Amino acid sequence: MDTLLAPENIIIALGSIGAFLTIVAFGMPFMGSDSLRSRLKTVAARREELSAQARNKFGNQTSTLRQQVGRGYVTYLVEKLKLVNPADSVAMKNKLAQAGLRSEANLYTYAFFRFVAPIIFGLLTAIYLFLLAKVEMGPSGKLMYSFLAAVIGFFMPQIILKNKIQNRQTAIQKIFPDAMDLLVICVEAGLSMEAAFHRVAGELQEQGPELAEELGLTTAELAFLPDRRQALINLSERTGLPAVKSLVTALAQAEKYGTPISVSLHVLSQEQRDERMSRAEQKAGALPAQLTVPMIVFFLPVLFIILIGPAIITALNTI
Picture 1: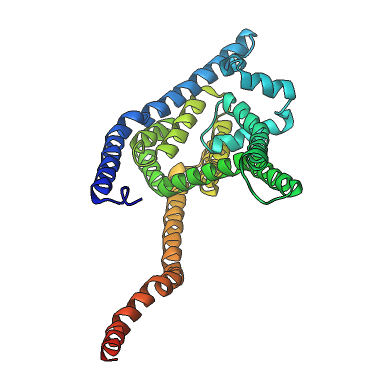
Picture 2: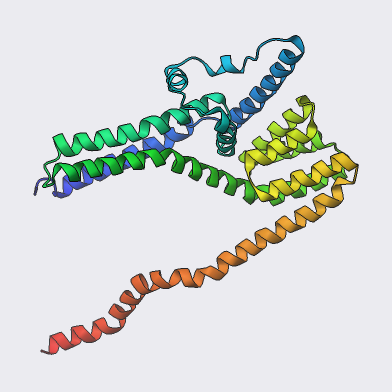
């Protein structure tokens, strides 16, 4: 123990940790994927998918979407056990799309992990409690903990998916007022709906990649889908945000009745600006209440030590 706490060993350990962190810091940019390239690939894949569906519809051919998923072990197990309910598959696809997971393979992967995760969690917990851990616990208690672990494993994929959806919706909602302003500028400049979406998606590639990806997919659907209103509805379902739903409603009404889009976009843009300001004011108003506990726990003890500490030290020296 004394050898481990020697100064030279501590210096060597800290130096090793620092070197490792330096290597990781330099290597992360090269290890990370190109998000812009992946987003462009997603839009291109959606264009190819819609184009293939159009060709198959008019050529009386079978859809190639099933072939794109692949016949892996996960797909075979999900289909064999009928883990995907056709009645719930549409709603589940919308949920996965809100998290940015749009391919058919993601649906099979999610259903597979919902089936496997409780078994893995429960089995590993049982192996640890019955074979590895030396704990003072009866078999009934170990079985109860194993069952609780299985329950946690059952809800874990849903929690991860919900958290991913919330993070993505927060990122979209943060940049959405700026996107509305850009849409107003593009529409007033005389651009069509597809051109405006394409231009805004290009401008938001760095600031809001999630919203840029959604607008790019909507541009592809507007170009290939026979019903333009369905492309706008798909945008609302993929995001699941009330602000995007309001935009889709305004654009659909303008598309149907031929009313000017710029007036509706002006109103929606101002509403989004006011809503973002109100959220910022709400967070600022909640700061005093949130800072009460940290001040009591961290600031007041230090303040008492500074004020009372010298008097206590003086009193102890005079005794």
